[in-house]
Image (cartoon, rainbow, N blue to C red; front, top):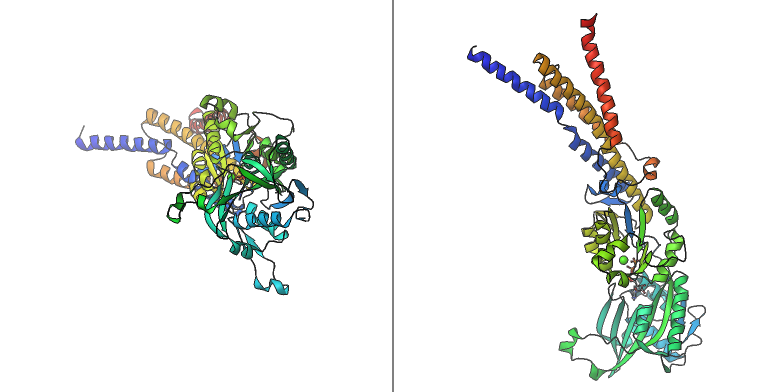
Length: 535
Ligand SMILES: Nc1ncnc2c1ncn2[C@@H]1O[C@H](COP(=O)(O)OP(=O)(O)OP(=O)(O)O)[C@@H](O)[C@H]1O
Ligand SMILES: [Ca+2]
């Protein structure tokens, strides 16, 4: 045998090998995955969800549980003060201060105007019947400031009467915010405002409607608690106002004042307000849709447990009003469990009240350890760790802070729970489209592989050479990917359980279809090839 012939033989073996590799590798897959992700990302944008990490679309489709915030996501975030309890009595309507003495009213108004992170813009034309004052700030602050206006508060005037010495801004961890103001030369007032039952615990006395200070007897504590409970059952957010007088001599000098920790014990209770934040319309339907899709929705909120329960009942997360721990649990109780106990309890939790952002993180960790694919919503800066830890972090486009948005995979532009459910639908469609493409591609590849290998072994030659096969692949892959990747979601997708973490991408049914199709294709091709020999 000559050298030329040997080389030709080697080249032939090489081309056959290349041909077999070309048919065996599903080159179209990355194209199809990217196409379907990019396509649904654009569609999701129209549905008010901005995808930051492409693969999150697909992960969202396999989510088994959603831990959702309450405020703004399940509710409208339009808060108004609808109940108030000051001077030891309920005010009816909540802006009726007739029973309160002037001193008490002044104190309440000073507390509202100074102890706030919001602001009020008072247009000058108001006196001539012009525009109404404009209130800005977080929804809770806005509600309280608007209520202050109803009480007759003159915002800038009240603020100019005293000067602020120190501020402790509200945070979700401590659930309270405070301020120290100097009135006159030596008088200092420290105001606190925050989660009602927590503030109540720090109070040792209360202010009567005539302005006299009464000590906080167990009966009175019971009365306050009853009032908080009643408001919470009516799904109101409860915020308490407390106060403590100080002397200028107790306040550190100006150069050390930055480290001054505002005194938070021995407070005097001024009163409590109940803030209504209605459920979003349509939230019930979305939650029902999730239930049908096998996704458990859990509410994690900073609000009082009873308020959380009432809202959860309203929007359908809970159906039985008498559920108990651990279905409905307080953040503190959950925090104090051991890692193992937490994992056991996590599965059962539907509502977590009075939670801090760290509790959210613990819940996400516990659920993930149980094998769940967890989607979490968050808005605050300190929600960032939970958003990071979750399989899919969803931040709020309107209420969310930049930090939360940066840590999230998807931004829900309208803060609405219904959008979240639409994201799940798109996610499932991405997953289904990828599955369809894989099935198509594998069927063709396996059939082509069998035919090529059998021909190569039996005759030493292949039916189509490498270049021809590449052409076929090019056309088939791109068009196939385009067709299958852009298929829109259908309703059937939301009626089956989530795929979760463990389910294989290629299911048994897909293998079965694949085998049947491969058998059909091979039989057809071989019989058409062998037919002339038989006749
Ligand atoms: N600006 C505020 N000043 C004082 N107290 C507040 C303020 N905002 C909220 N609170 C109190 O803190 C509690 C909840 O605070 P937190 O910020 O943790 O919840 P949230 O994030 O607003 O709620 P969610 O988790 O449902 O979105 C409320 O129940 C209320 O009593
Ligand atoms: Ca929150």
